[in-house]
Image (cartoon, rainbow, N blue to C red):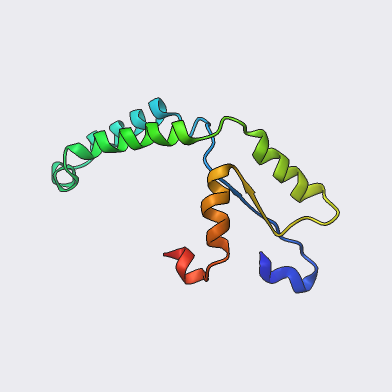
Length: 114
């Protein structure tokens, strides 16, 4: 936590972007989503609409395509944060994290929370 800095505690924030892992595998994610969808009450399903599942599945596939398969980018910044003599306060791993998260890190907290 950054508020611990006056007490000599060094904090590094690691913000990874999208990477291909088991959590982002479209087949696994959509299968789990469909399982949960079938357990929802009919009125909840009706509120979201029948196209919601298809839209979610397409966005999951798109996310997987845009994700990087090089997990070494994350582990290398973690290694640097843990072992460097002078670690940085903020690390981003992946091109999408650099474009979005790093830009947002310079904004006020109320804006990034929104």
